[in-house]
Image (cartoon, rainbow, N blue to C red; front, side, top):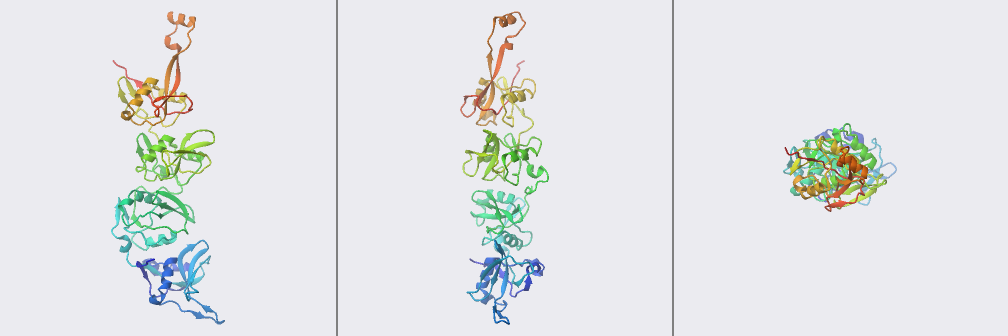
Length: 464
């Protein structure tokens, strides 16, 4: 592995405890501890570099080889290296106290230009032209970016999602692999993102990942891990057809019940998307920059134990059913308050611009249409067929079932007929409105087996 980018100090800084290294003046000038791999490279080139502490023999005749700090932490502690003969050299990972003392040799970038090159710009964010030459743990990744000085840093989880969209334009950086972000969720973990699938994973900071430096800022900023207000999730809502989509995922995966509660806690109509809405979000995911290729909850239920979520990672058209206790990602949506919008007019019928935001049972759908104002109602069977034939012109329909009405005259007794003929009753009094379900997927009347359907309101145009 090449370390041509590395500038190695000519002299040791001394024999110091770890907690004093941060106070060295050179640290403030971009110098830092070497990583485990860099320290191994220094050991191999030690004769050419020179200036290292000498081997000593203590009063008991035991050979004491000099030992140097690295910045790398592994599962059993921080790595140090003995600078003895080859057979004695190597790393030791131990849980040292910050008061333990070892030798210190600092390193820094030869030139930040070697990494920064000609930065790629996305709005106010500058992206280094090249990846760092090796994968490192999260602590070393932060230090490596900071060593470029002038505000260079690790990208946030949100910024990595944006970079993924532009990765084909980067050339020498953002190769397939997993990259560190600065976003953390615990004292021992941080988020990394795969540039193959736009998939975020929460990893131990001891793992090694690729590193790309950025500086500047993208507005708005990433939603924090701890939500202090609904706006931390809602941000600047993204408009997709008749749906408003929260700008950010909730920061943690959660069960279905928790997902419903979390969306409802945003208030003002925010909720889980239906199964069809979730599919539509996937097909428009370029607009929803943080929407990743992983599993999201929908609000669509199929029985008491199972709920649907869309498996974005493998097949966006496939819905899988999981128990509600499983942990999945969550993105909130909201339908506009104005269902009528700008009505679409066809012959003698006005059609509301938007569906109602949630699937409903027939009674609720019928009431919701009537509540829009005088004349608004559910469409009849023939009207639903007309809506289907013109769905691309009207817009906003999903390939699912919609509620409608069917008019049926109840059994007429002789007394009923007499009441009508005598003017005491109207023929309409004996018409019964029955619910029907019309499938926009099959263009046909569907059996009334689905307890909840979508609804689109219509209204007769009164010709004067």
